[in-house]
Amino acid sequence: MVAEPDIRRHELAAFLRSRRERISPEQVGLPRGMRRRTPGLRREEVAQLSAVGVTWYTWLEQARPIQVSPQVLDALASALLLDPTERAHLFSLAEQADPHPDTPCPTVTPAMRALLDQLEPIPAAVQNGRYDFLAYNRTFGRLFRDLDALPREDRNSLWLAFTDDAFRSTVADLPEVLNSLAGKLRAAMAEHLAEPAWKALLHRLQEASPEFRRIWARHDVVDQSSRVKLIDNALVGLLRLEHNNLWLGPTSGPRLVTYVPVDEASRAGVERLQGLILAEESARHTAHTGQADGARPVVAVG
Image 1: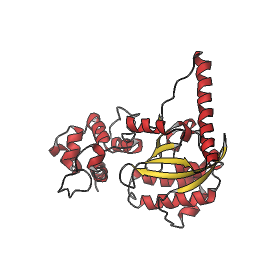
Image 2: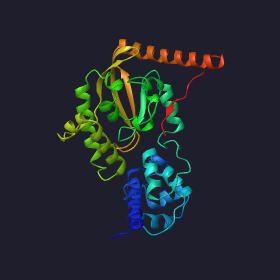
Image 3: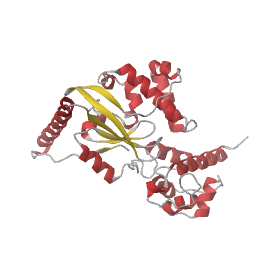
Image 4: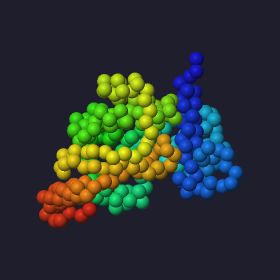
């Protein structure tokens, strides 16, 4: 029988290797070079980004019995651009406490947060391959429902579409959207079948939603093409918005999601939504301090 420490070491090694291979050199500011055969980053590049020795990191990916400190895990999580769920999984495999459990996702850089803010009133968010919302601007945060009012683990397109009444009530073509989301998840999950975070999401959806189980059983797959969505916003009414993805890495990874108005009525609607949000923030700030409010920063999850 294989001992549990051996299993954990091999799981940790496989997880690190899979994360390394999905990241392009350009994503972390490294040149690609002319003779690159390795998918993603080389081991020496991860070691360089994490400020650890190449031999030591190689041993880690070889599942050798070496000790890993929380500080080194923190550096590896940053170098490998792990999102909050992946970071938690890394520390769990290593049986170490995360010294910074609320560390922002490296994908959502200060420049990305500024971009989200500047895109307003156009609703925009950063989403990972599992459809978690990693960050979003104010208009996106109130487009379907008040995302700030939800715990981080519930800020996921599929979870909200299949289980959240407030979210579902805003989707004018709900059956079509549910079929599309389930098909997109199945297509994306083909590259992540053994990964705990993806399996946990699938299990959670199957446990919570008979509707999801029924659609999932069809084995339909759907591509990531853009489409016009009809959203019946609780504050400003019906909006016709074109959903677009701008990929920030591999197509199974994080992306910038925008909802661009397709007509003047919808453009006026998102502008009105932004105005209502700003008025609410100003009123709350004035009630609390007696002074006019300034701009609220983009929400970053994790």
